[in-house]
Image 1: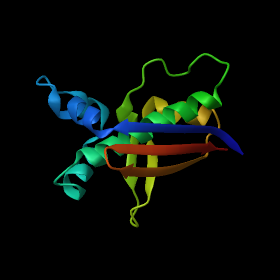
Image 2: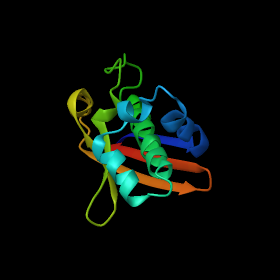
Image 3: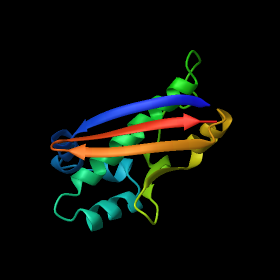
Image 4: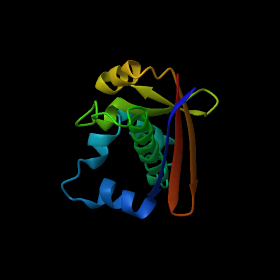
Length: 134
């Protein structure tokens, strides 16, 4: 049964500014795992922002779907650590979400047993859809 659905779209220019435009930095390292950053740099060496943007969209879509599961109740996660939501690819390049820490615990508490993820990017936009099921 579907528990939640989330959709997010990201402007690549805005994400590039967040990841590389701030001289103090930190956004990229605070919101993406080392594996996500390495994947972006290795698979998109000329434009890693495409990979980071679509992963950011997936994290946001996941959180929207998780909020839908718990609709009408107080949020179970007050301050999200985005590094606990990791977007990885399997050996056939299909994207999936690995959960860690508090986010993993809350998803289990809400009886989320399956996460479906679709990623897309075109032109200056990246988008993701997440479906949570039990």
